[in-house]
Image (cartoon, rainbow, N blue to C red; front, side, top):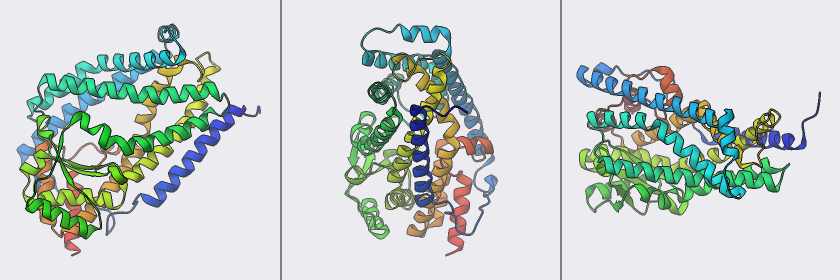
Length: 414
C-alpha cells in the first residue's frame, strides 16, 4: 500500500486532533443526562392546545417545511453544479485579477447565484409568514435585511477562503494544520464580537426600563450566581410577532437580550421564566462551550476538506492553491453542514434542556413555565408534534410538549 503523502498526513492529523478536542469538550461540558428521573414522555397536545390551534400550527409548519427544505435542496444542487460541472469549473477558471481578487469574486458569484435561485422559495416562505401574521416587516425592510445578511455572509466567507487559500499557497504541506488553527481562532473571535459588531446591523437595542420586572431579573441573576450589567430589549416587533430571548457573546461582550414583543406580551412571571432560562445559559457559559465546539469542528472540517481536495485533485479538479477551488469548498461545506446537523442540534437540545431545568428550579414556578411555553408556541405556530426524523435532524430545542412534561416532573419533585 502506498503511504500517504506528507500533505495528506498533516490533513489526517489535523482532523484527528480536532476530533479529539471536540469529543473531549463535548464529554466534559455538554450535559448528556440533564433530565432528572430518566426518559421523559411528552404531554398530550390535546391537553394543552385546542383542536383549532393544533390544526393551524400543523398547517403552517407543513408548508414552512416545504419551502425551507425545497430551498435547501435547490441550494445544494446549484452549489454542486457550480463546483463540479464542466461549465461551472470553466467559468471560475476564467475569473480575472490577482488570486485574492478571484477568491472574493468567486465567493460573490456562488453566494449571489445561490440567493437568486432560491429567492422564489424564500419569498413563498415569507408570504406564508405574512398570511399567518408572523411577519410585520414591509417588503422593503425584508429586502434590506436580505441584502445585509448576504453582504455579511460574503464578507465572512471571503475572509475564511482567503485564509484557507493563502495558507495553501504559503505552506503547501502544512496548510491544513495552519488553516485549521487560524479558522478555529476566527470562530472564537467571531463569537466574541458578534453581539457588538453584527447584532446592531439588524436590530436596535435599549436597556429594559426600570421597574418591577428589571428589579426581579437582577435579583434572579444574583440568585443564579450570574453577573449582569444590563438587560437589553431588541426592537424585534418591526420584523416579527414572535416572542424570544437569547444570550450572546462571552466575557466583556456577553449580553442578555429579550424581544420587545416578549416584554409587552408576557405577564411578569412568564417573562421571568424566559429570562431565567437565558441566565442559566450564562451561568454554564454555554456560548463559550458552543464556540469551542465550533472551533474544534472547524479544525476537523479543514482536515477532512484537505483530504477530499487532495482526492479530487487527482481527478482533475483544482488544488487548494487555486481560487477556482472556491465553489468546490463551498459545495462541500454546504453538504457537511446538512450531514452534521443531527450532531449539532442534538448537542443543542441537551444544553437547552439543562437551561430549562435550571430555570424551573430558580423560579420555583412550573405553572408560569408551562403557560409561557404554551403562549410562545401559539404565537409562533410551533408544530406540537413535528415528524420525529425532522426534529432529530433540524430541531435545536426540545419540543414544546417535552418542555411542558419536564416542568410537570420538576414541580412534582418539589
